[in-house]
Image (cartoon, rainbow, N blue to C red; front, side, top):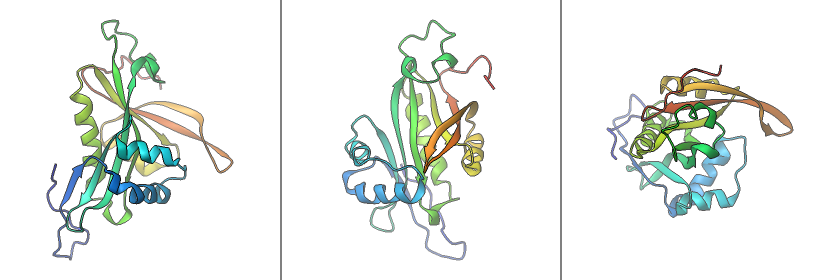
Length: 196
C-alpha cells in the first residue's frame, strides 16, 4: 500500500513516500533497535525472529522509499482465539459466535522524526483491515501502560474502546504499572456494556 507523500519538515521540498508492507528479515536489526529505543520493556531475540519470519506474528512495516527502504514504523500482532484471550467475557454473550478470533496488537512504533504524519494511524488501519478480512474475527485489542497519555489519546481517536483497567499489569525496572485494555470491535463484536 502506498501513502501520499508526507513532509518531515513543512519548509522542505522533499516529500518521502511511505509504503506499508510485511516486515522482512532485512529489517531485523532496525526493528530490534527501534523496539529498544521506543519501549521500556525488553523483547527477546526470538520475538524479533518470529516477526521477520512470520512465525505466528503478523506485521506491517512503514518504509520510507526515498531512503532505500528505511523502516520508519512498524506494528506487530497475532491471532488469538477468543476463548484463549483475557477478554473472552466481552464476547461470550452470543452463543452463535463459536470459534471466533481476535487480533492482538503486540507492538506499534514510529521513529521520532516521522511522528505526527499519520504513519501510526495507517499501520493500525492495516491491522483493522486485516481483522475485518477474517469473517470470524470479532475485534482488535491491545494494552497501553497507564501513564502513556499520548497512546491513550491516539487509540481513543482511532475509535478503540477502553474496556478495562488492569492493576499492576506491567513490571518494569522494579516497579508495577497499571494497563488499560482497548478493543476495536469488528463484525458486530460490540460488547453489550462496558465493564468500566
